[in-house]
Length: 456
Image 1 (cartoon, rainbow, N blue to C red):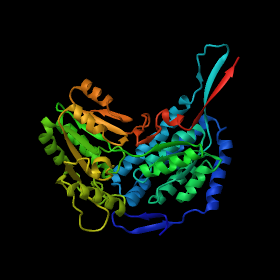
Image 2: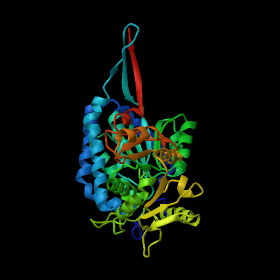
Image 3: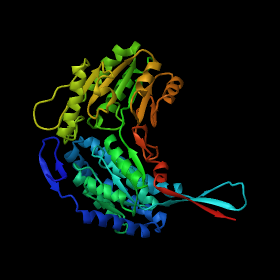
Image 4: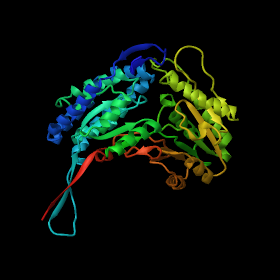
């Protein structure tokens, strides 16, 4: 089978296969991106912004086609897929409208004579390595700020989203920019390594697994290339004793089961103070039961299949490991009959450090609930993870909740809300969740040359 293939996760059917590019084609792609950069960097920023706005408009115009491809290739329920397309369009639009102002020169207040100005300039050709779980939004996060800045893009999408990759490439290349500023590459792992090592590539951004981050970050470091790595997480959702239980249960269930639980910022570890454990568990189970499996093409479906049979097998192994060592299954946990990579909304408790589900990222519709004896113990459990992407703290006393949130080793935290992505909010984590930030003004600074100009 080809490395790049559309396999319908709802049925297991291989729909279409695509060839991996040749080594010569990979080499030429980098050279073309480098050549295009010499022209694109000199294009007026407002002209570049118009191209980015055209990309936003095309996403909205082709929303149904983009959503349908998401549903076909990775199983996202179609209503959720439409929402992702609109979020992606809003990111392009944000940089088209706000980006030129964010790139304005910064006059420094210096002690010596003369003047000093910092210009924000592009650095060159970049490689983006994108995941399958948000195949439209993740691309927008990387592409929008960098095209606006004046960098050029090589985009390697996930192997199971080739048609989405081609559709996005068509949108970007049809938006009015010069040839070569954006190229889709169906590259192998060895070709990716070669691109990173190429002297004309200036940086690489990866959203993916911790293992992939080690490989890409290592290659970038060996070749002295700038890298941004977003490597997933195991987000804690803390419910304090004074929290609004129904609201917390609703948000926790949505945060955990949307996109079949296949989100880096999903509420994977729900940590509940002891006095409200029984009431919260009952409320959460009631909400979890609303997430029933169904055909992702149906408008009312909330929980579609996982992205692939192999992804489901990994999840099942984590659940079986926890149950075999004493964890309690309150809901779900059993493979359904029939075709497709479906797995039901599942709720576990009693997960301890001897189990894989305690420290590993659980990437699927499985919620792990922990009972904490105090707020301080809740913070300890939350921080007892190799990951540090996002978190949430729910409690009526927002000052106390904010104090506890400040103790969490994460890059993003919500007070009585889950972490939600928005074009103007920085996105990223600490520890094994990665390096760097995306979105907002931060998305413009990662692959930028902050160039000093001094005059006497």
